[in-house]
Structure formats: structure tokens, C-alpha cells
Image (cartoon, rainbow, N blue to C red; front, side):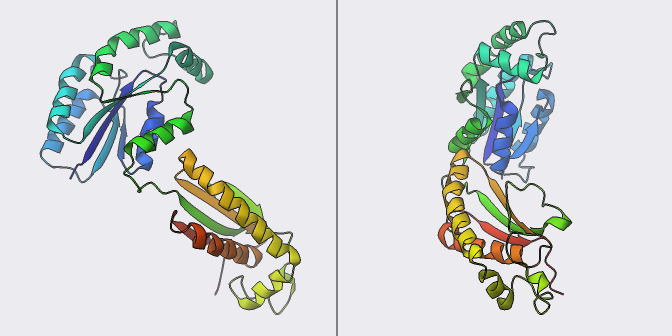
Length: 288
């Protein structure tokens, strides 16, 4: 059953796509540039209870030629009929919008000649929509991270937005895992691979762990890295980051990286596990 419907609109260049991405990270079903004629059909579906999504966010604006003529009636009807509906209007000052268009080298949708002319036209056309909006955010002083943080503060249910942390051990010879935010290289530690009786074992075995810890640098690395992550993780969470992937690599991904990733995971899980979901994966571990 639908509990929340957020319509995002506003001036071109004000950050609508970034706002939609932030809501998608909050588990909203996200739709960009939905034509208003289709939205009318969509609302009929919602009225009949014909959707499995509990939270939906849509970006609608004057990229659709029928938008300006139809939004007053359609949006007023939505606000009246759907208790959990909101209209979020994003704005920014002319100087900032002009700079953003110049930096991206994109033309304004309302003018092929002058960016500022397009901005002025758009302000006039969307003036009534701004008055109709249930929430207005001026993004003039915001970058994408600040806007995401603001969206999370406004739309996340209290206590539900928790950054997910993923540790993954890997071997550099097999390739670095995709989408890692932080990488740590533990190839400087003594390698169990060169000890015949340990070669077939893994970093999950006691004998390998004891061998690695005989290298006095191992404990120092664990302590320093754990302290560093304890400092860093809360700042990532405050920024509004929803996923943090941390890779720890050695040569083959079987001994040193496996043990070090597991050890740091255990230490952080005991202190941060109640705040953030933390998972551990071993990309290249083969135990058979």
C-alpha cells in the first residue's frame, strides 16, 4: 500500500536528479521525467490500490511540453486525494544556475541562445508551482552531498537510515573488487604462501593467523587501520553516504588479506555493528 508519494520539480539545474537519487537510496521507487499525461493514468492506478510500492518519488518538470498547462489541476488533485503526497520544489539563484549550466555545457531547455533568458522564462512558468509546493529547498549553497544530506534529514524515517559497510578481501592478481571506496594493501606482511605447510591453508586457519601475527607490523597495522576507520566511518555517515565498501588485498587473496579483513571486521563489528550493518566477503578465497 502506498504510504508516501514525493513529486520533485523546480528549476533546471537545481539538483532534481540528485534529489531523486537520494530518495532512491531511501528505498523510494524512483521515476525520472514522467509525462504528466501518464501521471494522470498513474494516479488512477494508485487510487485503485494497484501498486506494490509503498514509497514513490518522481521528477516532473517542463521537459514535458504538456507539464505547465496541466500541473495545477493534476497536482492539487494529488495533494487532496493522497494523504502522504508531497511536492518538493528545488530552486537556486540565477548566478548559480548559470554557472552549473556553463560547467556541464548543457543548453537550457527553454532557450538555445541565452541561459539566463531560459532561467527567467522558467521562473515565470513555475511561479504557481512554487506556491503550490509543500516543501522548497534552495540549493544555491549546496553541492550534491549537502543536498543528499538534506533530503535524508527531511524524508528518512527516524532511525532507519544506516550506512551499510562491506569488507571484502581479495587478491591483486585477480583484480580489485568493483566499487571500493577504500583500499588497503597488506602485501608488505610476511607471506604464508612461501611456507610449504601453510600454503594449502587459508587466512581463516589458526596456523596461518599465528604466522601472520608473528610479523610485528601486523598488529600495528590492525590497530592503526581500525582506529582510522573508527574516526572515518562516522564522518562518511554524516555526509549521507549509504554504502561504504572497504577492500583489503594481498597477492592471491587467500591468506593475509583474508585474516586482516576478518580481524578488522570483528573489531569494528563489536563497536559499530549496532549502528551500521557490517558484512564481510572473501572475493578470492577457495577453501576446497
